[in-house]
Image (cartoon, rainbow, N blue to C red; front, side):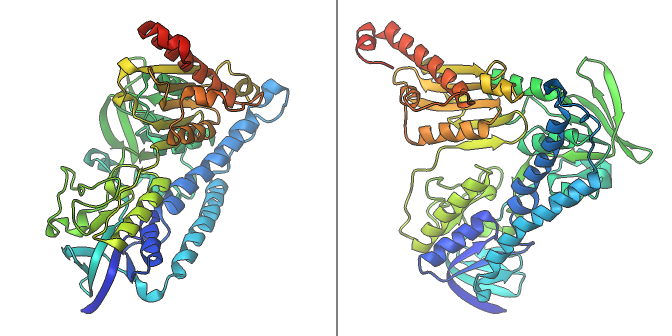
Length: 478
């Protein structure tokens, strides 16, 4: 068995793993990176980039067909060539993957280990029973995998996950989508706008990861105008009939209904890819899902020499966070046992369906409602949104009732990928709603909608102060 001794061993060459590897080498340490699967990252191959490419094609068709109200005629007959659309998506996807592959090929060859790693102990990894790696510290960056509940396996080859979508040669005519999280919403709406008859099923009103009920209902209403969406579905039976996936379910109107489909897309969640690591040999504490218990401000597992980053830690499943976590884990692994904690960036997530979804800062469920005021804006009447014919959705911003400090936001609407960034930056800078209202706003722009919500929050905050402490409110604005 080949013997290797290094300062830092990184398991997984995805976004988090590569960031950790670069950080360790940048600190002057000897590091290796270990990968069992294809290089290329989830984002580039089957995640962020190909899904946005598919959406861009779908939105282009949708927008082109929606011009009659503006007096542009003859566009309603446009249609998607599914084979050509998917070929285009793969071609552009491969461009992004190529960039990742080029970066990996620039790593010194002796530091890239191909194979599946498992722990023999905290300091020793075995790769495919051919290589033994002794490391001062280890970073786990193994990513996640699609989780498929057993009752869906009846669909056999007609069952796909988001990992399979971009290898399709053409689009299905009818597709059932299970789940209404970011992946399901983006692919489901893209399919629908490209001409696929989509039925989407979720449970317990889990749609877009939104927990603010009015905002979630605004999103559901907008999406139901485009395709069948049941946010709290009851599916009685899943079967194959005449080779076709068949669902017997309770319809939105309360009646029983049976529909057949070409494909079933399961996007009900992903799980950390940790089972092959033999973590039990390390002695570190694991939670009930088998994920190491770790400090989110240092990425250290307990007080051990093991660090974790990216989707496999089960917290923030987004590329930007994976990169940050990988860098932090790599820095601390390189300097172990001198581990440093940092202030993490504000939690921030987006969904790129239309209307877009943004969730920023504190979870709505975790806010103290007695000390929180909410500012609201409907995009249905917002000027620029109406001009763009994208006037759907609702934005809520949350502020501390006494201090006016911005706490977070949830919203769906046009261009909220940009509004979300403004809100995340304001949170990171500890701004109040009054601070934000002092910023410049052009006209006519969607950002004026954000200003409307901030004004309402500011007014409520001032009223709260006036009610609780009139003398303070008269002296200090909220």
